[in-house]
Length: 188
Image (cartoon, rainbow, N blue to C red):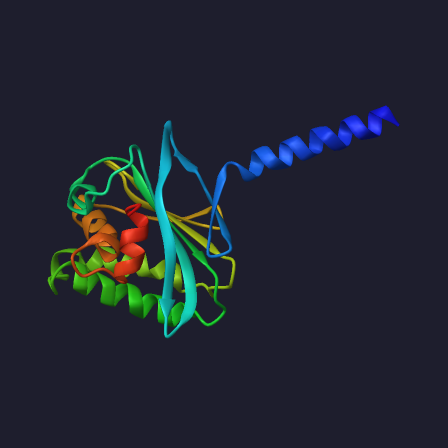
């Protein structure tokens, strides 16, 4: 009897500890941290991307140190990440690619030509069918580029600091994908 109670208590403590390591946003538990190489990135902020009153995905920004300075984050040549957790079955691969390309155009003020090849390369990760509950980790590694992991599995890397700036600009620039998501990612 005592052994069963002890086991139940240990399991309960472990479950509570596991829940303490995540922040619930839009019904999704966003981890408090992501690890890239030897660097641990902390959740800076997270929010929900909506379209026509529907929740599409939860987006989280991960940095080495918390910051609300969007320009500094975009310009920084240091490890950082964005996690996109899909919460809608209405988001198709085609829609995601189109929205991403539009985001690059906005983030660069329409000047995508210098990074056109990288954008095409990056958008190839959306060729695979997107399903509800998929997660995309977009991790910038200085000197290497933006690594993409889909559901924890490595998918691609796109090189270049200019590309990274444009990608993070989709969410954090003066013309973000969604202003409320930008504010949430900045922890405001």
